[in-house]
Length: 115
Image (cartoon, rainbow, N blue to C red; front, side):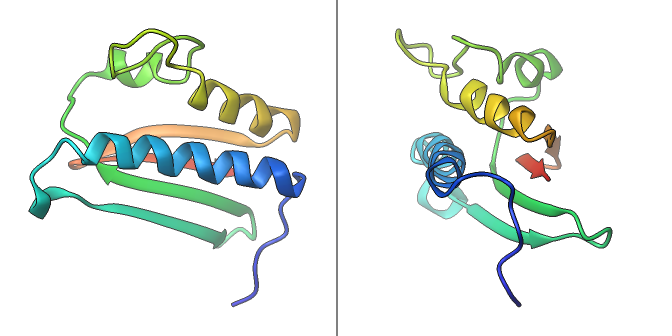
């Protein structure tokens, strides 16, 4: 399978993937070893839209938290100077008229970027 065409610059692709993976790894590192699971998929869907998707085990069952996660300055980690990564990801996606999806599926947090 060939790498999909993404509208963003290479440095922006690195920012997107880096932020998504960093967030996922930071969350699962607090879990028991057998629960730690992170997946990254980059490809084209059945409608030939390019996508980047991360999934990680996620135990917070709150729609409010999901809604707040991409807002500037909000962090599930509860520390100062956090909460800018997903906001930045969303800004890059919107710059290229893409779609930023964040949802929970079973016990996983799914972030899917469509272009």
